[in-house]
Length: 92
Image (cartoon, rainbow, N blue to C red; front, side):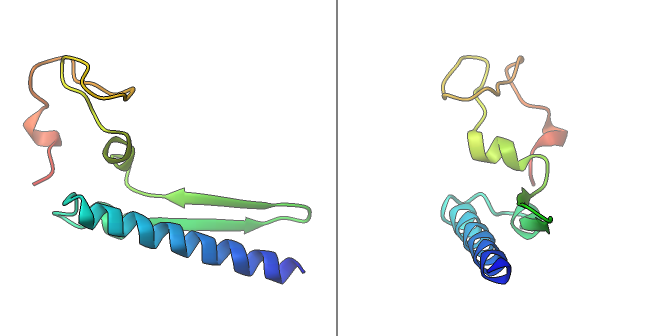
């Protein structure tokens, strides 16, 4: 039974990662492939539970939730406080 749950959780993690990669490509947000290649999962098996975590580059959350400019344009907790984002923070 334990092996079946672990197998299904691994299959689920693989599916989520493949869908996330497809979404990046479909949205044309895959220019450097850095975020795409960083997508991973971590399944931990404990005596009475499982823990499944998804991993990615830190900036992935901004890609996922979006970032508004100075004026609130998107329903996201992230926004810039100046008119332009710093050039060093932009993906090539």
